[in-house]
Length: 287
Image (cartoon, rainbow, N blue to C red):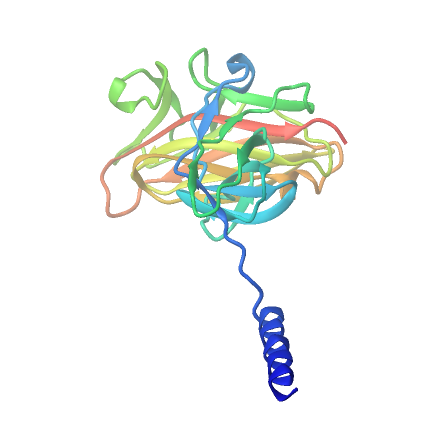
């Protein structure tokens, strides 16, 4: 009887240990080293240059988290599983404000769980088109024309086809400053209007050896309001930025908007060159 009691106590302790320290499930790992942005309708959305820095990952529509690329993602799964992967960007060019980009489609990936194993996957994204859901694009690639005009200052952006000054395609836009041309300001000739509450972003490729200011002009019932969006630091190489305009476009009913670029020659420089390409305004056109 004494031995039997000891066995019962031992089994109870063993079971209690299993409850306190349950067996850990072993994940399957999904390795994402890079992503692709593939054209949908280039004549609508323009360039497919991108700066996707992160992926937001869902497993069977439950969020696992946001991961900086390259990423090794642990997934507790049994049998077949499905990931939904969204593209992530730096909101307003800031690494501390990472966000899901709403104008790219979702990548869906089905896999067979294989604990401890690493499964490699490259997500493929597309720009959303104008019908699923309704998205509006204002595109300036400088290939056909130039929608920028002078907004004061000494000069404005002009087109260039110098191969050393072009980001992609045949043309970009440039502004050069020197001792006699010390400042520039350019504004879009076309206005755009965004329904209140809808996501709205501006994409921009740029290269500059001075500070570049991007601003927005708001025409609300004939009253013009100008507000700086961001100050871009000098960049030796081409960079891409995503500017979130929703906070500006959502505050005005039936307003019209234009984009302004401006800058000036610092006291410690005798010349400068600023280049931009492929800027676009994208917003949802449904309420």
